[in-house]
Image (cartoon, rainbow, N blue to C red; front, side):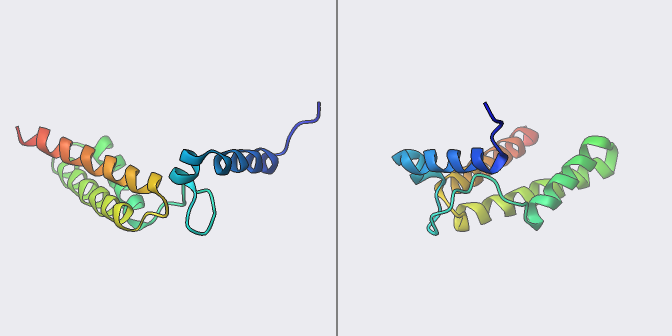
Length: 109
């Protein structure tokens, strides 16, 4: 059996997603494209870099980079909730916003 190319597998997956109603609603954009992940935008890149710095540091650097990461994740989440290309992206933004809020609440206790 010949090995299927990555594009063939991707095409097959996209065809399956488009054929199942709830998957179509969740992952297909208004332009009829399947979008699960996208190249990170600036707030997400800032959040991930700051989170990495916070993980690898201590003291004041840890606190400042942790706050920068939280703020950037909130900005990214709000952007996804308001302008996400499909319901999956909007739900993902809401989940991340909830997790950041929960983490902030937990820190305050």
